[in-house]
Amino acid sequence: MGSWCRSRVLFVAWSSGPARRRARRGAEHGRRTIGGPPLLEVERVTKQFGGLTALDDVSFVVRQGEVTGLIGPNGAGKTTLFNVVSGFVPPTRGRVAFQGGTVTGLPPHAIARRGLARTFQIVRPFPGLSVHENLAVGA
Image (cartoon, rainbow, N blue to C red; front, side, top):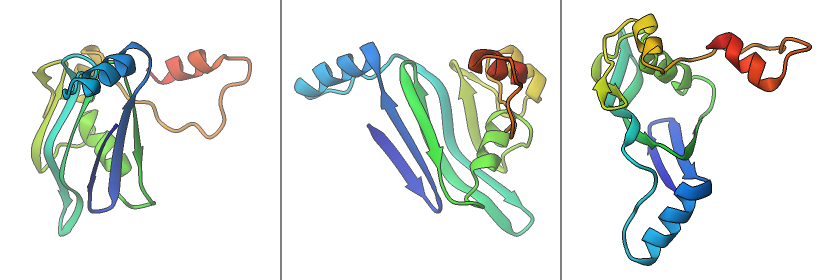
């Protein structure tokens, strides 16, 4: 399990299934082998709105097979981070890469075409749709 903390946001990643078993075996041999190549890389991302720094030097990597969570209190910058990663707002500094290619500065539709999309919080799911179908509505 890896974690990163700077300012008010905490990023947590853990693995399940085959990736977790590979990590456990690797740990027994003194090496880390979770997942494969990075799917999502956020490198030293900062986002400022005027004099307010919403994100300060945020870095993390998400690999295939990892289940990832982003937690923090209201106002910690979680939504801003999602907005930067998905291209809705550009970072002041830093880089975002998806599947090895830089997506920093691309518009949201171009990032979505590469396979990285976000959904917006829907307070009430659509009745009659499965969880998968409700998630697909936002994709």
